[in-house]
Structure formats: C-alpha cells, structure tokens
Length: 354
Image 1 (cartoon, rainbow, N blue to C red):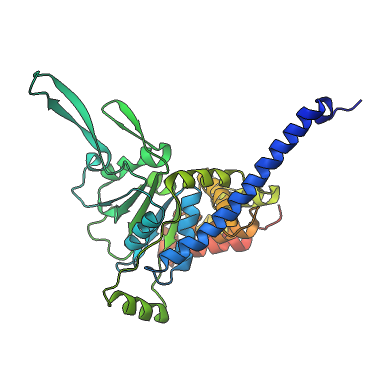
Image 2: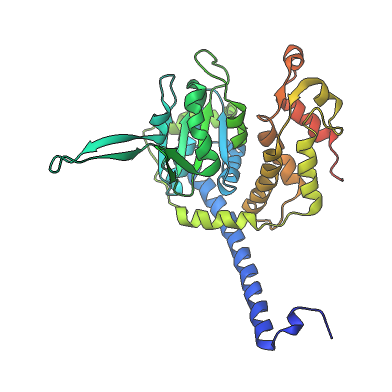
C-alpha cells in the first residue's frame, strides 16, 4: 500500500493529471520568455523617443506587470509625461491625462450624474457620464497641485479598481494603472499627498537629470522635426494574461522573510528597528510595503528572464517601495536626514539571513 495520491488513481487518470501539470508548467515557462522578449522590444521602442532613463523605465515596467501604480518625482522637462504616453502607445493601452489644478473637482476625475429629458415623451432620467478615470492608463499630471478632497477621488479606484457615484459602483476595465507625476522643487500652490494615497502607489521613482551624453542626444533628436513611428508590442488582453504569470512566480522562504523584516524594521517601535530609524522616523512602512517588495521582486525577475525572485530583486526595489512610506520626524528634518539615507540604513542593517 502507498499513501501517494497519484498511485491510487487509474493509470490513465494519473498520466492525464501529470501531463496537465507539465503542460501548465511549460506554458508558464513560455510566458516568462515572452515577458522577457517583450521587455527588450518595449525598451527598443521607447528608446526611439526617450533617451537614457533606463532605471526609470525598468521601474515603470515592474509596476506595469505587477499591477502597481507608480509616482514619478522629477523636475519639469525630464520627459515624464512623454515616457508614460509612449508606453501606452506601444502597448495599445487606452490613455488619458488629467492636469491636476487647484480648481479640479472630484467629479472631473470620476464622472458625474446628469439629468436628461426625452423631448418626445417628456420623461426624465439620470445618466452617469464617465470621467477620464475610465481608461487603462491614467496620467495624473502634477498630482499634488489639487486639494486633498480631489486627490481622494483616486483612492477607491487605485485600490479596488472601481468607481462609486450616485450610489452605483462601476468597474474599471483592466488593466487599470495610475501613473502620477510630481515636481519636487516647486512647493507654492501645492498640497501634500495624503499618506493613504501615497501608500497606494507601489513605487515612488526619482527621475534624475540626464547625463551629458544623453542630453546631447536628446537635443539632437528633438530638434530635427522627425517623429519616429512606434511598433506595437502587446495588447491589453495579453498584458492581463502576463500579469497573472507574475503571481505564480515562486519566492523562497528566505526571500519572503527578508522582505517582511525589511519593512518591519522601518517602524521605530519595532525591536528590530535600527537606532537611526528609532531616532529619525515617526512612522514606518505598513504591510503594503512587504507585499509590494515581493510582487515587485517577482516582476523584476520575470522581466529579466529568471524564473524565481531573489533577495537582490528585493534590495533593488527597496528604495522605490519604501521612500514614500517612511515619515521622518522633526529631528530628521532639522539634521537633514533624508528618507533615502534611512532606506540605505535599513539595507545595511537588516541581515539577509533570518
């Protein structure tokens, strides 16, 4: 006798189950290769319009395939908007842009109910007019220029992928992603992003100035009046299917443990928090940080053609996942301690081995 479940099945049933699982595994491996090939093709197409910014584009693709929203922080003129619109064009995604301004209202984002009258019958009915949030890829341009009341219109959509208006809940068509931009140097006429909204962004990506060589190439290619034609790489349906593959990427227990310990060590009340965190942090990262570290590590591994996430993947994404979730205290501001320095402290103090 044996307790093995397969042995208790008829031979043809056992063989059928084995073939089915083998077929599924082979299919997943093919999808991994497809994602890696798609990444190379996407980089090539985006490179026709965007010079440099390789790290920014890699974070953008991680966010896309991990179904995470992304906040891009950089000074004006660094092609943040062009990068996002180019990605939407390459992937055949429906794209809408909202310019966030102080007079923007929540209904300008989500939509509103209007009263309509049928002139032939005289009957009146309320109809919901969908706002620009009903799209695949929403660009919230300079998101911190509108009051928190309007920013809050994004909260439900970013978390639940739905919009509630007039007592009715309307689902958003997948894939749905919010990519927002923010100017870090101009604070007049801006409003701080609520912590609840910041936490819904999977990544906060710093967009740096280009190198001297890249800037030379930018000036050369943008002053000749030639607009390169982009090749379409994927479709929305295919993106949804590939996003499902990310969830099936295996994560070793020590990688999962490292991601959780890294997030927990950012909380000053935790016994494992380094001294610098206890001294300079008011609030640390919540459980979403642990989730996004793991999901991001999975996406990064697959995009590079690897079949399992590693600690290196977690460490590579830690600054983008944690920097907007760590709240420095007044002492940190007075001493000039930045969130980047605090994240670096975490990476140096939290051991890889549990």
